[in-house]
Length: 522
Image (cartoon, rainbow, N blue to C red):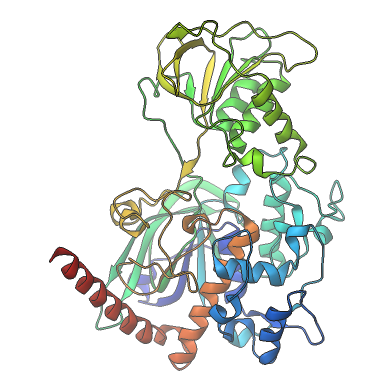
């Protein structure tokens, strides 16, 4: 879809604009397009308490029910209550690996549809199109699917069968792009767009959001973007949803020499070096910094080439917070292998009296993982121009290693440059940058409204509110769609008129916050 300057051409105010076209934005578009979940007649949920609550009003859709009431007493692997609720309805007993039939049925009710627009830089699927295509996903394949289209059914005619196991990122990205076409959502998607500004514009009592940006001219197919020309656009919206994810800006260590050419912050830079033939068993070691799954993928990729690897990370190998200690060994054998390497091939200082040392030669024993050394509880002190890196342990001992490349893979931050102060005031800790783990956006747990937004009608979902798995981010779509539907009912039907009640509540909340601030200062 090619955008026009709606503000200057027609003055139209859209009910909803969604920024981000990954699985979060796709799922919300599905719900806003009139696809409505109901308790299927005769269906039973394995949780008797939840089933009894749903059966109290079987004629009401899930969008019309009290989500907070339905969430009471539920427990799951997400801290977001609506995410646990929706997951338990879409995948009953999913934590046990069971493939139970969902008690929900989906009805297409076009009269419930809310006009909306989904903005994304690339094709539908978001960051999944940029992930490494052959590695397996962390989640089970059926945890990656969206409502209304079983991933296993879609995969039947593909190159391999998916039977409740894991799929590759390339397969998942293709599934999401197909989902938009299959569900006839394409008219709501504007691909090739980069949002540059989102601002609140007071107008009378209600106001609106102004969303500005640039769009590349589209090709013939959905998401087929041709970089011929960038055209500015300006949209007005009653509600704006932040669904950008957190893969935009790689996290940095902030140490001396981190900007040197041999220091990389992306798995793709490692792939580029591999494709150019720069790494093999005769190369100087690759230093991988980080203990997450992307760092593990980098270790595996380098190890596959027999390239030597140094692996430095801050936690102890046995730390329960380390993700490898939270993953079943049988389901994730490749990551279990990395964990074994981290345990069995730890760097041992040559002398306990030395304050600095160099790593010993790599082991060539057939019983160990040759060409690998781990440095648990170490941090990088500096990167030197001569490709020497200084590592320091918790005890203060320093080790200098010679490397060919260094990969700093310690996570990523969302790009919220289109918001005032890059969105910092919206975080749980307003003085710090927004991150998905340590400082997500502060949002209401049952509506996903952004607590500290400039005006009413701003929502956040997915990794921005700390929900990193597709399995659970669908709950954010339910919370937002339910809140918007509630606003429509209270506003007398039309979404543009549904903001009055929200505006009143927002004004009241701002007054309460100002009162609390005055009390705190006194």
